[in-house]
Image (cartoon, rainbow, N blue to C red; front, side):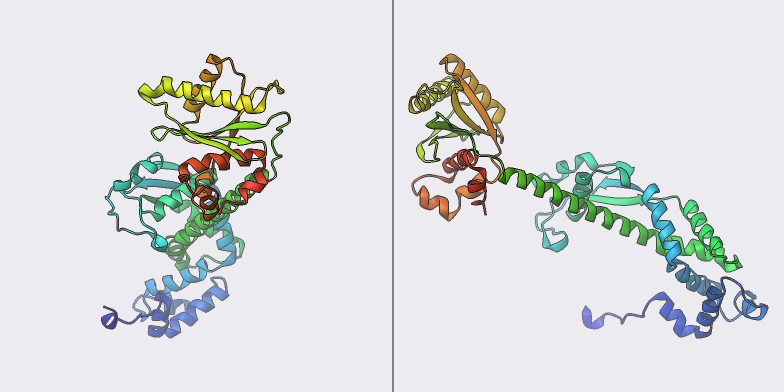
Length: 374
């Protein structure tokens, strides 16, 4: 198609400049003199039967108005306060090969994308009321072509704002100004301002999201090591359902004593409880009876944590063993478990079993363990 594509004809003003060069000079004179022109110059534009069409003159004057810094600042300021965003879901089913911006695959109905953004279907709110996570989620939905956004603004109100700014700049309202203001807002300023406002909102949301991530990462890395005084071992549990709870018994120095898996779903619940009791007893024997705090248990805070905690406390109560549960973020544990470093340390173990070791070690020394995650 490219060889047969017609050449670009230039912008609308470029075409007018080529066709009516004298009209451009007249509009420039009108704008420079703030709407004040002598009768001869004004009649060349406004007089019926003139060779200069009025719509071309309006277009040129609208371009001058839309490029005025004072007008842009005033419109942007009010746009920030008054702009409303309307979000709608895209009903068209996307195929798995559909791609959004930057070549990323879109989340169509085949992979549950429609449910992901269900909360934003027919969503309406002021733009400056949106939270950072809402802005980023809406933008992500638009990139994946699952959401479509429009901006609601009162056209008459903003035309009055432009008129007021020009009046304060001592412009005389030439008969062309009314049509030019309307054209400048509807054709140029509305889209420019809403696009700029949306980009600025997304940029601020991104920056604040990065700040939150940095603060959370700093807190995680600088968290103090665990107090393992009078404790020689601890039980680490990586929650799961069908695959079971991956368990590891670690020494107070992070060395692996044993790895195990506890199945507790459906009919295996009683056997799972007995299995946990045996693990607690084993840890208690390693640690001895020198600590009144009970058996130290480190539990990952992922999917299935509540069920694993209930199983653990039930087992401790049945065996009359005092249990101290410590919740630890398991983010990145599965990533480390598939690294070359982990495979060298545990050549005979699956990555799912090794993830519990990472959770336990980050409880003992967070900085030393978290820096291993690629």
